[in-house]
Image (cartoon, rainbow, N blue to C red; front, side):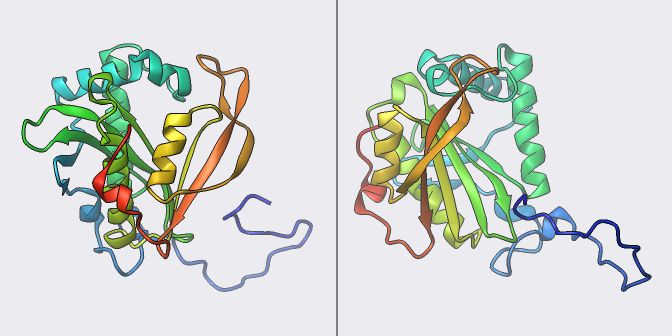
Length: 235
């Protein structure tokens, strides 16, 4: 059975029954701790020397930065996007899709910037927001010139805090390809416990006809926040 889908019986003739309530609009698919619209997915988030702001699909600079991140060999080694991102048009389309997800209340993507200079450092996104299960999945990448400065750790730490407090979610998942030790260490530093290996859950590098395993990490709203997530170290 697919999680979240209703179970029905076949071969039974439906009676009149009660009227089925309409699915609430996307703006209401959150718990009571959120606002009644999608404004909770629109803020910029600041923490120490980082600023997380929504990507702007109309910005040439944002499209160029996002494209540069997706074309980075280290990114491509560990990630194969569902939609290939090969040029500025692809990057703009990806950012437009992320903006639509935010308006629908199903996800939000942030450009990670240096709080002082405004220089872009990377990306972090909260995806597959599930109101019923109060869960979501987080993913991130850091531009080559910003690596080794704790950007991923600090960005993940502040994003997790925002997800649990402002969005009121309970579970945040993170997965990465087996062998991606840097991402694994970032997850552990931010309190995302290793929960197991998902077999064949990701595409192989640069392919969409072969699969590889990934490690699943997760953090709950009730888990303590590690000090390293606040201070940042490593990637």
